[in-house]
Amino acid sequence: MESATDYSVVIACYNSGEWLEELIREVSKEMNVTGKTYEIILVNDSSTDGTTWSCIQRTARKNDRILGIDLMANSGQFSALLCGMRHSTGEFVITMDDDFQNAPDDISTLIEAIEENEEADGIIADWRKKRHRNLIRLIGSRVYHKSLRFATGTRRNVKMNSFRILRRRLVNAILQNDTSRPVMGGLLIESSDYLENVELAHRHGRRKKSGYKLIPMINITLANIVYSTTKPLKIMAITGSLVFFMSMVMAVYFTYMRLVDGISVDGYASVIVAISIFGGLTLIGLGIIGEYVGRIVHEVRGTPQYNIRRTTQVQVNDESE
Image 1 (cartoon, rainbow, N blue to C red):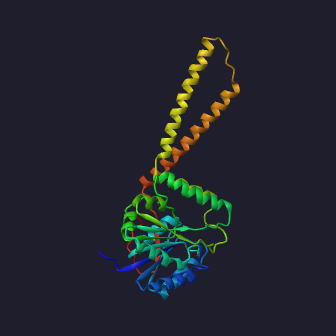
Image 2 (image 1 turned 180 degrees about the vertical axis):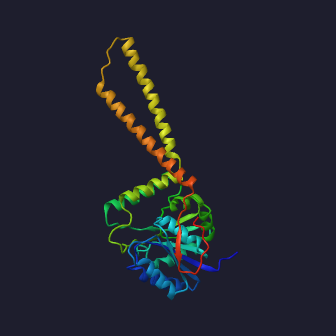
Image 3 (image 1 turned 180 degrees about the horizontal axis):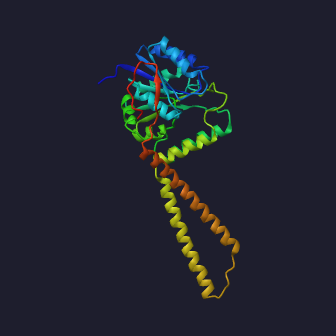
């Protein structure tokens, strides 16, 4: 069954009312050039600026191709994107940031790339030269991608980015996952081995400060690892086994020195150091286990990915999956 719409553009919006109308205008201009049918889905992730939702409502009244969705609480970019994807009807779904960091005129490059590669389920932007305004953001971005490769064990060097175009079959596969705390990069790699990158120029966004500060970036990185793999638990088990083996060897050695050679084994400082190291490893292990247990609790509790407060349509059927 073919989709009624060729392209769906999904944008998660947060405190972007100052420039959102301009972004919508630029995206619409670019999509009109394609000559294909399209829709723009704007998901307001409970913005606090007081202007984002009113801007979405205003533009939706002017353009029937626009659907606005207002979430009841801040659910995070990944959940907001999934909400928009659930309401999309396009054969291809394009996702992008709301702050002009993804240039609307690069949409045509994504469309061209996926039309030329029929085997690809998705095309993801890869910045030629990524320009971040602060060192923490730059380091965080690199750690994020490294952690994703570690977690998924992917053999292909596919870089993740919020600017992407996905075929409907991949979108449907992603939406089958009902995890309460989705991680988009993990979902993409888990759902398809047929992802490709296309190089695009990176631009500075309109925001003066990044929406992702140090702690949220650490949380996202941990979420990638916890969602995608049990490798940390395996590493912890291997480390514990090695430490136990080393401890047994040391116990035999010192017992021999004491009983056979009659040598008094001093070592208050070394004992304290050993206890501190093993205590630290124990706490790290408990922390790793706690991350997994916390995710299990959320999944068992059935915490919804998002809850819709209202839309620009009269009625939308959604169960806040």
